[in-house]
Length: 561
Image 1 (cartoon, helix red, strand yellow):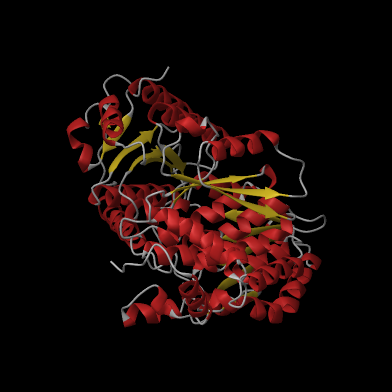
Image 2: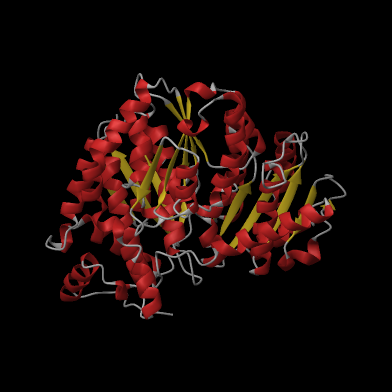
């Protein structure tokens, strides 16, 4: 453990910020090898001038795509390569006359099938986004979509664009297959810090977002956060200190509140904070999408950040709730946003604040040591399936509800009874812990509503925080803190039986259903190996009906009606 002081004097703060802007890796690590790795992840600090140089190229490319008659952009990516484009598309939408953007950051077979059957290939452009160029999900998605276009079009390569680092297999693939464009991102930027690079700006420009305006807001924030600015007015340092100081006091549940027009921004924040800080049993657990409640139901481990947008009418209920939190002595940090384009400033502000908070927590914000294990287990499970023709998984059947489930090793004594397994989780789950709902299911608003109601029930019954992460999306974001962060957590994972036979993915020999199921099984095994409490519920193909049945069992098991 690399111990950091929880308090810095004024002189120490000024020296610290100076070192930060000089990209001094010893801020986060003493080991020389780790310092070298960190040095190769600090390019986000000065990426904006590079993107200014590339701005004409990006805008010209977007204009050319529009003139080609492209109506739909499909982004194939995960985590840091997809979440910034996702939230920009949800916040801004597509400008009139510009293509729509569909971010496909899943291996769910129904989501993939919907993209394959809902558009005209002649007016579709695929963005394949991956820093390493080897990420499982975008690689599998490319392998699936390429032959579909190859069978219909004489020039399939002209309907693909790559965003990746130099020298990656994806860069080589783009050149070999005649991609319309290969954008080579600066290699010294990690995925979750890449919002203001090609990964965020190219998709933004393609849907008509004014990237000049976005970059101007980011430049303004960089100036305010610079090494010569007074620390008491330096936004990056102030927010980083707020997060870090409370984090080392075990106030580690960072609850994000936003006005409705920028609500999607929480998804990007969740990934950045969780994957950067959640390791070595420490970290800030971001809580987004939770319904508000009476402050008395919240535990003392909570801190709140409220993002308010000036151009919108006042959202009185949320402001009243924040006032109640303050009266109840909860730490609340308020951030004012001028308008939607101020997200450019927020990208940099949170990148800086998260990196600084990691200093106080004593962790390296630029690695993700616990992500690899789930990937390795997924690969091993698929290998077994290819040889044996079946998944190496067995479920219990609850005798009363007939729900198929299994429990992690920490709950092995209660595996035959689902209510008993649930009660065991709640018996050991502290009020300062949290329960994560992890559905490996389609992006279905009705499903999210059912889980939202369960989150409310859990908080009312136990007083603990809850999170919800779509699988496999969360594997590239909150999955790091689930396995590497504070151990006061429990997990409810959901998969479903196949509704039909899905087509195989070329070169993989399995369908997307098999990949998605293997990813769930692999992560469940990683959680179990980490001696974490988890229940894996295998729903029927009618997953909404099955999820509602489980909700009833959950409600009865925790004593709620």
